Structure formats: C-alpha cells, structure tokens
Length: 236
Image (tube, rainbow, N blue to C red; front, side):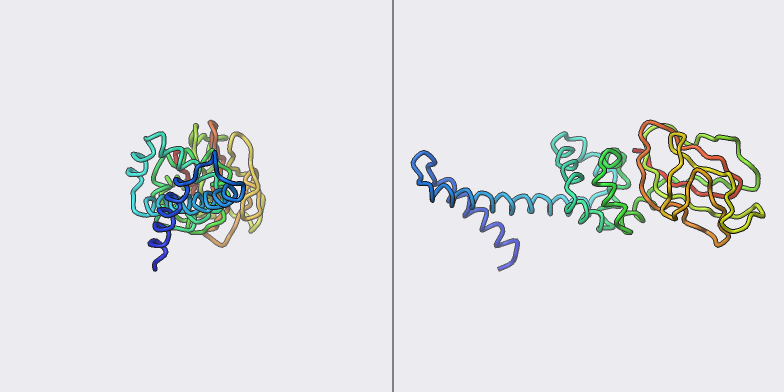
C-alpha cells in the first residue's frame, strides 16, 4: 500500500469512528481512545495540507502565487507555513518552490515580516540563490566617489546580496576604505565577517561581501562607494 493510499484510508476510517462516538455517554477509556485517534488524524491531515502547499509552490509562478495569495484564507495558510520552522525549512530547500516565492511580491512582503522564514532562507543555499536570481541587481560602476550618501531605494524591501565587483582604487586587500552600504543609516556585520558601515577593500574579485536576506522595513538602503559594487534586493 502506498503512503498516499494509507493516509487517505486512515483519515476516512478515523472520521467514521470519531463520528460514531457519543461523547455524552462514552466511558472515560473510550474518550481517551477517541482523543488519541483525533490527535493522530489531525497530525496526518496537517501533513497532507503542508505537502499540498509545497506541491503548489513547486508548480506555480510568481504571478500565480500572487493571485493565490489574494484570497485571505490562502494568505493565512501561507503565513502559518512561514511561521512553522520545519515546514519552512522544507520549502526553503526546494529551488522550484523558492523560485515562485521570490518572484511574488506578496510572498516577499510576508517573508519580510517573518523572522522564522528569513532564518530558514538564510540557512539554505538553494533559497538564497533563488532569491538572488529574482532580485533587482543595482551596480555602481565605480572609478569615482559617489555622492555621500546616495539613496538607492526607500520603502519595504528584502536586501538579498552585496558583492564587490571591481577594485578601481589602489587600496590594499582588507583596507578599511570609508565606503559604506547602510540600511536606515546603520551598517551591519556581513556574512563575510566585515562591517558594511566601513567596507573593507578586497582584491580577489568578485567578492561576496554579504549573502543573507535582510528585511528593510519602511526605510532606505544608502551607499557611499568608490569601487564597483552590486546590491541585489527584492520589493517586499
């Protein structure tokens, strides 16, 4: 018997047995047994719902997901998935599912507000690559100082990746150059271990300075640069 056949048969049988119980006349042992049966059936049913959602994400597009999320019930189901760490880890590991999620501005807006979802994405290279593939990629060509500061975008976004693309100054490797990239006026410690508040020059290029999804909540991404950098972000 296949897993799906067993699951469907189990849920059908559990529903029939639970429907036959009269809680007003059942003994204590019967109620305890019914409670255990209900708990097991609920767990199997929840797993079925989560698996169905994963399959939907793996076969839809960003536009299709936006349309699906326009229904309030679907939106609530999606947000419950984002808040469930094991389920979100499974979704984040699926390149197909994350491609649809990254291409949906509605989904990205929900992710921006979920620390659990962001943690799952940052723990998965497949998820990070899917987010980067869908992101808007701004490139500062370099070779001269930008204004101080330049506001790249303002509003709600997911910052996806920062890369140094060129070394157009004569600074040595690891030289603290006074360049910066900031969210809401503040730098942060990047995944490379360096601060974005005072960018360290690298000579082996391209160099992934930061490779973590970070929420930008109703504020600005700003920069002050001389070298060439790429800043990847998603509307959210």
